[in-house]
Length: 181
Image 1 (tube, rainbow, N blue to C red):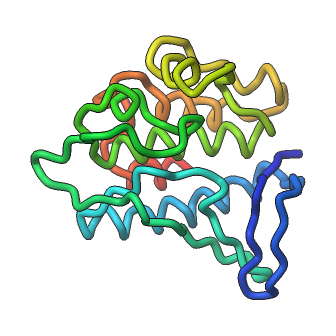
Image 2 (image 1 turned 120 degrees about the vertical axis):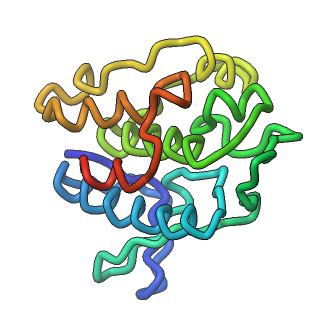
């Protein structure tokens, strides 16, 4: 079973911070809907910069929406992150360094979110936000199959591609991620 934490059921007004057990198929369905929403944002030149399970709304009918575009930015040729923003557990290496941000930064965060939904764990922990940010920059991603041995290799490969340290090694567009999901 997989987990999604901090799910907000919008249409039935039930708010929970409990972990909810999901099947791998449900997680993939959530990710397809989530990435479809991100594709629409990216097509409108908007970079979210704070993708995480806490910013996902799921209705009781199973419709997935992305929320909290509070730190989103219009994507331009000079979208530089002047201040490190976003949740440190989901932040891309380039965000952690204060560098150039584009849709590949959101793809990294989608990969971290997928990892957490599949395993019920975050890939990097630490005593401080600085330690966690450094882990995103320096440490290898743990293999999700350590926690979920039955995870299909295809899903493992998707997580690996999303969470590459170098942005140019990730999916270049969310549409490619959707195709693989």
